[in-house]
Length: 531
Ligand code: AMP
Ligand code: MG
Image (cartoon, rainbow, N blue to C red):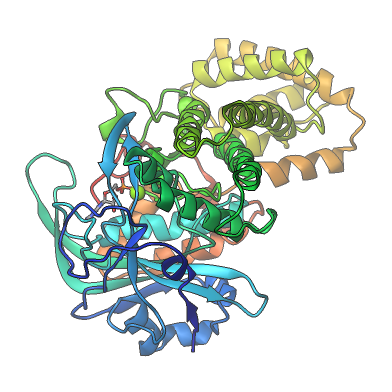
């Protein structure tokens, strides 16, 4: 029996209208909305790890009661299901009210350790925020979200979690290629968990509408939910509010900087970094047309809608996160939070990002610390190699720890073979020359490090994963699942548990670079937002 709390709805102003139809919801943080019952819910997969987070025995996730709850057919006692009200900047433009158009929150669960988890169902039916859409989600995008968010967690990246995925037994119409040919697809619901699903956009909408009393309440609520900050009363002084708000914003800036370093170091591209998809927890949220960098290209975007402007391409992510934080700072300014201090927090973001990126890149290469100019030269010349020879980001770094440092011919040849195995291009003399030149410099610098070989390899292998959820793997899992075969989903769930550890010959194919057939296949190289 899971027990729910409803602090978000109890402490914050909500919509006074109870009917569920699309509308502008004024001066509110949420609207009550019930999930739409579904015809024939069936469990596809669940995360044992997530079940344990909320004290559910993994065995009971296969019970029909669990499936009924996670499909929205059974509303657990004590819940007050609601959809959040938020706005956002989409592709750099203010989009006004967006809100949970298809996510319905049951409320918060406090586990035995006293930790609070919000539980929401994504794809559970329309809400007042659905605008012209149906409130539903398809199996295809739900599998992507389910697998990638759990994988991210095991990679060590802050993220919303995915407890379960169920099919609804109903069909959902989607124009996957945006070409005017909609098709029916299987409907599905993902149950997500997070400490908080509040986004930058929750603040932005209230600020844009100058609903300042509600904005202030939301801010105080968030501060009080942040364990590192001191509690505030509703009637606290401006001075107290100002001080805690700045610390709150600083914590978001620092967490977001750390998140960007993680994304960049792993080659993750979110694809839709709109401000409504930015979590105040500094977590990865809303998995849509994301992708993993394969052959290096800083302008690569997995999102077909983003191709014209490439706003959300790999290389721009840290800058876009900064832009998004700036929008959040602007919202706080509406409450007169001190401008100079907010700007200092934004500077903290930049400094934290740069310092942490340098250290992480040094770790990827096997250096304990970043050593300034010397490392800059090594890193820049490596990026040139990546660009020139189309090297796979994940395979290259993982294999780099295998490089042999003996200066004899045999090891030189073996080293070239190691690097060539990460290239998407035919390798020629030019490749050999350039790679040898870089390796020579690299080996020279590694040898001047004080780390033992074992320590260096341990550091590199803890930074550079073997297995990441490449789009083509997810697409294969989706194609099988469409035929009721969930075996690949379950196999990937095994592999994701230890992405930094070699899992033997039976998992060999999952550590390879993208196969050629996947280069231009829909769902493998680029994706639309259709979900
Ligand atoms: P996204 O880009 O997926 O994060 O979604 C942007 C906005 O569109 C959010 O307000 C979503 O709730 C809403 N949305 C996306 N898909 C649907 C859908 N099928 N039905 C209702 N709202 C949706
Ligand atoms: Mg979203």
